[in-house]
Length: 402
View 1 (spheres, rainbow, N blue to C red):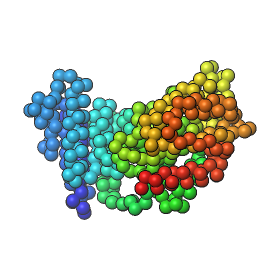
View 2 (view 1 turned 135 degrees about the horizontal axis):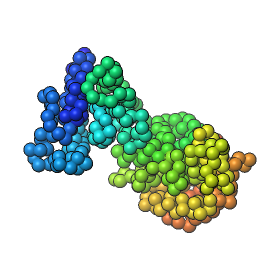
View 3 (view 1 turned 180 degrees about the vertical axis):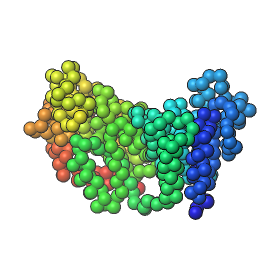
View 4 (view 1 turned 45 degrees about the vertical axis):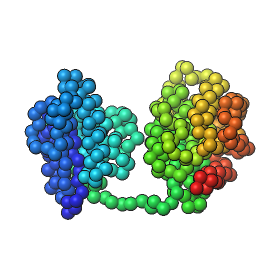
């Protein structure tokens, strides 16, 4: 048994004390150490803990427990400080929590402060809902409690026991990646998969490690966040599609303000293509086309469909993307395939519209800083030759920064 590794059991022990004590006992029974952290905003708590943030913050006058919302925000702030310090000091190697709506919000906010790779398990009564804002860009494992958490019973005990086993297994795992290779972040989405696969093969042939990100909103933000932490030697933004969905409130929207922005304090080369900027992806099928989109070109996919963007929408996107790239002129290169930007945007396919693409390029070139290199190539984005060209341009950009 490995007693040197420890798990932080963090929770609102005033309301979920029995559940967290159960987690503590199961984890210790498996041979790992436990540090308990109370982030509840009321008294009392039913067992002795390693860190009682409630008592500490009350003593220091840092907790307004007369205002529930403010008390939770205060507790998140102090909880983040503590958990980050424990992680930096090597005192914890994983974190687990259990909670209802408020507890999930509070504890997952603290969890998100932990680095990638530190195990994070959240048992939640609301895990079957949309967890985008709960998980964010982090590797949090959500476990649905199925029943409400009001003590330990024959059903909740099964769930909590499996959650404890999960965090123990994760915490014991010590696989280490190959850190010798240079890493390239690659954004893509389904309509340009052929290109992404070919780019990946070519970069791997040149001895890079390629880290792919699904350009689905959260994926793009995760890529930017890891870039800011120094994970990558280059970014190949094959899919800029998230901008289109952000504009149209599509399936891959919600990218946040940092997408396509310069990485603070880092000089990371970024190769950009207009992958997927021909369309927005929305959740509807051919049986239920929204009235406002019935006059558009539509590519029916699965439970989602892609709509062709208009000239005006393309103008807005050209201005948005150029504004962002102009903030980092020394590190950006743009490749524009002139024969189409997705599998739906090519001859004989529903979204093919070279005139609208050309209008985007015209506005984009007018707005783009002249110091940024832009190349137009007579290819489709999914052509093998385009993928090979993109990989070699990325390679050259990385070598120029070495």
